[in-house]
Image (cartoon, rainbow, N blue to C red; front, side, top):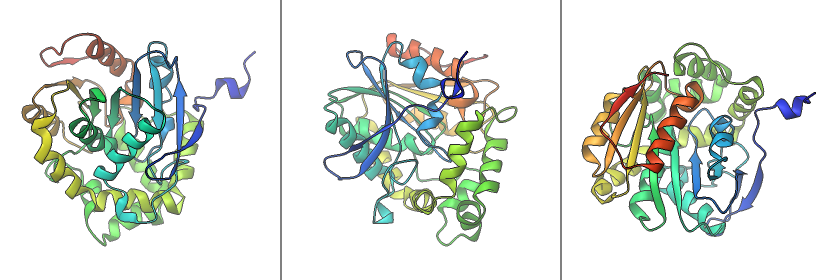
Length: 298
């Protein structure tokens, strides 16, 4: 009989002090290190445990690394809150890989991990391979964003402070009710970890600071988008109620080597909502040349 611990969806974690920034970063490592590496970059309100289904499956074929962004989960926060932004997060991702002496890695990223992943690809084409990015906002625009996301980006927004700092449990409830296609299916132990993070001041500060320092990093990425020659798979949940799927189509138009896949019956949290569909697309993308955009039903 399996114990409760054996049944747990929580990934085993450890910490690494990264060389350039000197922060302690919590991460999970799965699979054989001789296999190609995939770096997983989480969104909000999440931490690395969001990859509870994706990471173990990928580890059968790949060396999988998943990190907590600074200020989230078990990673140190920046002293200067303005450092919680896409460009610095991209530098954190590279510092993490370099500290572990990872010479080449693919990336799968969602939500706030979206823009840092693409910046990593633009700045480090010799070290970053194919990228899978999901349901994020790479450009300095609010035209495709829900009211919650627009409020997060406004300085001194009472709504943003209420959602992130004053009522994190209510904020999480909104996120999970709205972020899944038909009901929250996050395992209890994972959801408890997410909620515990939501009550941490460091996480609240990092969350709010990232959104309020987001636009310059988005503009920087937009200025370098033409430099990304690596294949990029853009994935969107058809029923994402936080970020409209039209933004995914716009991104693909601007990237030199990208295509869009829309997952039916999925919301914003594709990696938790439809992990099998995401894995199918990811395996096909990493092992074959990019193909014409399609939609799939799970």
